[in-house]
Length: 251
Image (cartoon, rainbow, N blue to C red; front, side, top):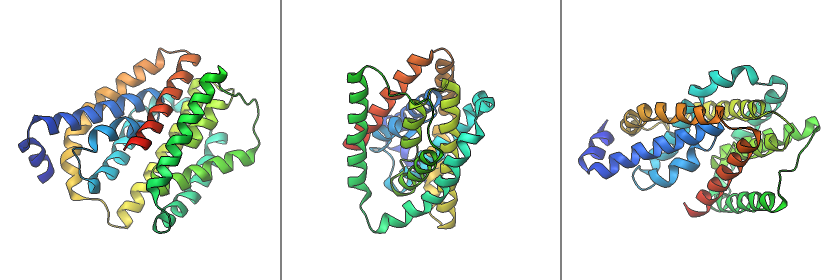
């Protein structure tokens, strides 16, 4: 709670930054089922210490996705989701283990540039590439790659989101598949943090501020999700992927 007292003591700007980041992240996650970090990090990075920031993004993202999970629960395709999750859980600790070998800073920069290039190419082409059928090995590869990217750089949702958006699926099936994958990866990450005793006590203060406003952001985002059609949802995903890429390049 010391950080909560410090935030309040340093003035309203710090408190409002925590609230604004929580609302923006929850709104994006409520709409798309991912992108909490992309929307919140650029605001929180100037207020919350790096020791707390990564843990807070993972925990808040998990809470936001759990809040909207009941709304898409019936759309989860377990045949599609389980290969992602299973191979993602294999890839996640591998990604964490190479943190000591490679620098995630430059990896994030390259990933951000590739994301922006992908979005620009889709807009230039006029539509997303569509896959009617995909081999099972591609699901294993995407799940494993997402797990490695999540364990290494906190980017677990990018590959599954792109893969699902390319399939000829309904928006509910797309969202349910990559949202349940992201939830699984977040739980895995928090378990690793706990086992390594990395959960910081200073996390409590900002979370007390963030969680109430996240409720409003998550439900508003999900309200908007329910009112867009398939094309609008895909365009929304592209915009959030572009924001994610820009955030990776700029932060």
